Length: 384
Ligand code: MG
Image 1 (cartoon, rainbow, N blue to C red):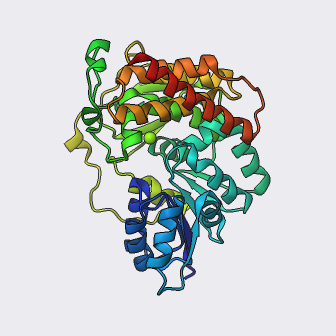
Image 2: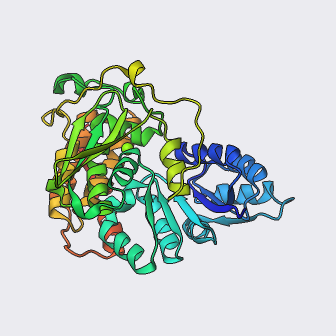
């Protein structure tokens, strides 16, 4: 049987390492290119274990070190943004893009341009440049397969009945601070935020889950992936993270996808679509779960979804401003330089101040992202 060749972009992160764990068990997958940011020590281990043709490091110093470390192999080591883009575009059946943030945009575009199907784990790509990305994918005949659990759930629920979709319902765990008021939320630390109740994820997305900005980004992501209006996407708090999202059809039928919270399920689904491959040991027991609850989001305290809806309605460069400001403010919060509530103010201020361009080019989006980050740096400094 022909192996499915996979490029793993962002291989040292949470999604990347889980993808490689799937490759350990799933002998039908073969890793041909790896790319990551700056963790050359882990990359060397991965390179020796999976024997890809190419390894790329975004950080040029890390790339230099890796080149020396892998000198006894025939693995080609590439460096910088171009190197990561080359790895993403490398000949394979599918490229999994799991670099966090807008840093993943260029490599995803390079992979689409080269005609690679995409297993998309980088939501910021669609948030900042959704129209361009979806248009390019259509032109190149490329499938964009969602790895985000909510979007995988919607993708599986829609199946081949996209024309009958009335509404998407995206579930949110509510994060570790569900039920808090503003005063309590203002007092939480980065350490508190990194304790997610159900999902094991990287630091940036875990903070995004706590603020519900993650849910906002997912609403924008869903709008592009499934070509629905922002007003036809609902969000609901579902504390158990068993129902991963739902689709309502025109006849009132609502289809949901359920499962235990485990990112390996959507990763494996995207890598094998339209087939299912992974055999899991832990399975959903409905009687063990017992109760599934659904509640409204407190939008007064957790403003992430409303801010994203504003960005999505305005379109153009506004989603890039939202995303850039969020990335910068989350970075500041993780360093203890601001409160979690400051993240919302930073996003709002950056959106108010952003240069609004209605049909932005990729360069405009990157410029807007940069300006939003600068705005946040100045804004947070002024507060101290
Ligand atoms: Mg998600």
